[in-house]
Image (cartoon, rainbow, N blue to C red; front, side):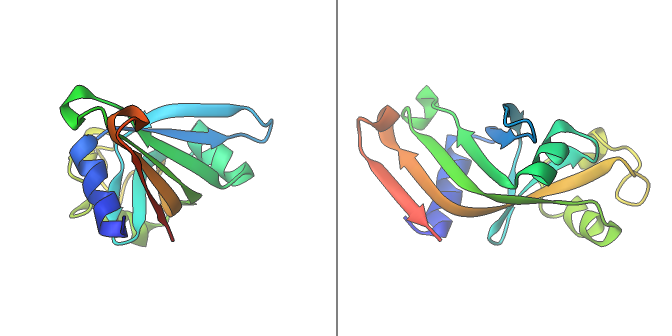
Length: 144
């Protein structure tokens, strides 16, 4: 599987994934997110003071799981990588239009220029596994 196939499988399986992070206390946290790709980076909109932001500051290792669904043929996708938090105005302005497939203003009405509590999580994938039919139909892997 190449990177474009990885992206295509994520889109095919669904728009929602579960993001796993680990805090400074070593405890895992898992939350649903709506990630979107820009080139080789997977982006997630987050709050600057969110658990996600605090966890990534303590431990940059993350994982995402696009869950099994019957409309996907019971396929699921797992992606592992590292993450960084970006709350600078230049990144916000660049990502605000054209990267995400939904209106970010629904979560941050001030837009990129007037949403100081808004940030973006950049996930830099290092490996991925596609499990076909819950793993019984085979698996495909990708490594950077």
